[in-house]
Length: 410
Image 1 (cartoon, one colour):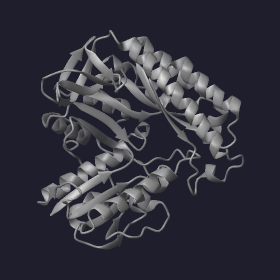
Image 2: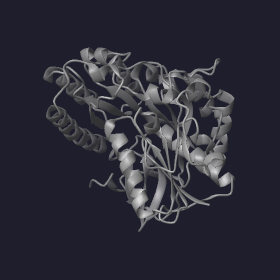
Image 3: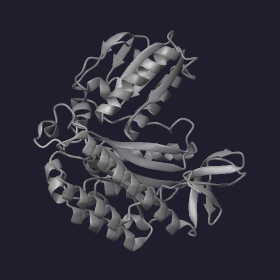
């Protein structure tokens, strides 16, 4: 049977799609383009209302281009407390890693309480056709942030993969050609296998032999700061993605985020003592309930002050059954759009400034693609570089002054 998997959303979802791919290939099935597939699997996202809409829209698109294929819908949108219609088979997050046993079934097979009994006890050998791989080490979150619906989809019970299993999985990935491990989970700060925490896990991965590097996935500033001394190790990329959301203390308190703007500043300053080019990409929510113009400005000015390398800006999206959805002081959509626009303009300026700072600095790029004499890949600062190159893919190349474009911007 020929299958096609399309993934929306987070790195953890992509990791689970790789597991589905591994299971299906192990059962004798073959990956194919959607037009030629007998089965199309949509691994959905529900982090925002827009993500849910796109998930269903994409499923309808696949139905149009291949109406003979069996359509399977899975992922977080299945658990979004809404009716899921129009699919041959609907399975939840707990069922998708058992896809090979379920692919021939039809109907609605969803256990919404799966997170009370499942374990993160499976591995993959990489992401198909990628030299970078997401290594998921933790599932679930119990922080209770006011805006977040993820605990509804993933559960509040924390499941951490045993450290020995993580090291074995990482070793297998490296032996299979993976050059960059991206450590991810629903909230990796909560990693604890009963004996080891996130620091111990990263320290153990650094000791693995081989030509590879490690990148830290999304994390809050306080728990990133706990890892600071590990960034002295050359295998750890000088970049982190901060789950910031706001740079204003009052907004952070309403969001129920467990840190302050001073914690953010301290984290950035500490890590830049080791490398003044240490890059921080950030997530920011614009227009959280009751956010005033001055509160937004505090976030804006903090991002300017810290000279982050990239801003992922999102308008606040009220998710059903979350505290923020029923808060007073909901912000007008036009105001949210305007604040996102301003953040995107700031993002462009800060990205250009970071590119200028790193222009004549030697960078190590992992070559992901070579086409028409141009090599493409991410450097250790999480900047996508394009430069003249005739060599092979899946290798590290040091560049300095040979860049043609940065992320398509000359």
